Image (cartoon, rainbow, N blue to C red; front, side):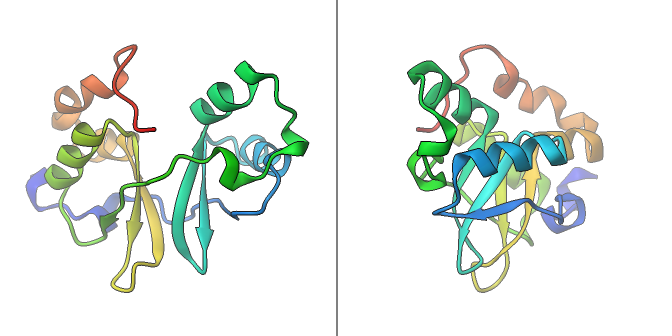
Length: 145
């Protein structure tokens, strides 16, 4: 079943976005307000990076950096790996495992951001893929930096 489900059918369509120059203070407030663990960074509606809770911890808190003195492009994960909205769940799982990521920005025909596919989206839509995604949830899994 999962082999026929397209990314666009299960992705999160309402994606929180900021631009490269947004203060991290605003990013943190947006994440808290929306109760989410990531924010996409875009330029001209094309994804340039992603900021996750992990990025905030590793790049700010461990370095005692104030959120009001840093902008999004200084801490986002880049390069990012995107997936076309017409790809299938197995293709997405393969990408996530290969790159060690739990979030894939989803792009349309012109490379524009149309959504985000998360490992959680896949687990809900195709629980049979849980075992394939398990590596991503183990402590110390490879992270792209």
